[in-house]
Length: 354
Image 1 (cartoon, helix red, strand yellow):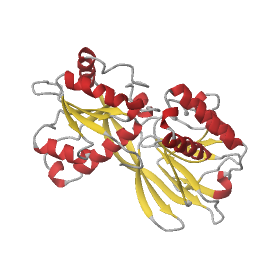
Image 2 (cartoon, one colour; image 1 turned 180 degrees about the vertical axis):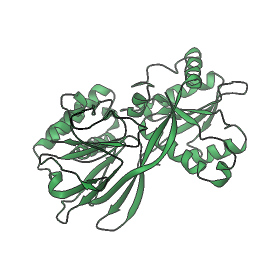
Image 3 (tube, one colour; image 1 turned 135 degrees about the vertical axis):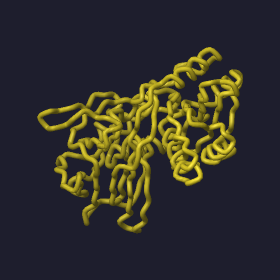
Image 4 (spheres, helix red, strand yellow; image 1 turned 120 degrees about the vertical axis):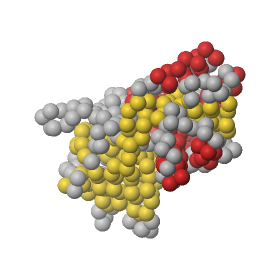
């Protein structure tokens, strides 16, 4: 169990003699169990499979480093969704922070993605596709996939840290942010959707059904009263107070220009001084959502979000009369909490393949 999700995954290594030296993580629970379906295909293609469900990815990585199976040229292919990507990033970081790893001089492997999740925003923005479409359905296709990973160009990718302080219990924790952080009605709609999916997974069998249910929850939330952001929170960007629209019901903070299954939420605006969004420019984009209806139908691409700012640091401060609970989500994982004092700032960069 990691971050509220159960991951049943596998670690795949190209067999001896393959110059690609590609390592693959498979989330067998992603994409309606698609990970479990393609796992035998990798085995049939002569690839060694190491089951991460039996050992944590961090343990596997450490063992592979000690056995010289991860070397300077190793590249990683993650077969899964955004949650799996985040998990692998965190595991790699933990291993490479250890002196015994950094002293080897081996660079942390660059990663590519075989999209098996629902939103797949990370794989979209890094140009590995929006969904699984048979890329690992045969020996020939697997060979081509590995060749693509081996020949892909590398870039740096910003990672961010969210420091969350519970204003009631004073508990403090840190969360990595890869794609985006949001709080307000959009996270509440996501939480309702996620709760139903956990209770009745058999209902969620296709993207079309998923979008319809998500939209339904948005419509339901329209008839409920939702606290306005400006009445409950103060937001600072680079130390300066941000003007929050009076109709704002949610704030979206993005590291990549792909939100909620591929929606491009940011565009440059020279009059307002807004540049292009980039995942390696050391900046975040801040947007506002005005209604629950907009939250429910955002995936239909009917509505656009209001662009507020680009910044290197953001602080979210609950006011004394802040309404509880606070709904928020990090990289698509919704949560409910007492009001949180949140500080998001740059953490590090990791290598990605494009």
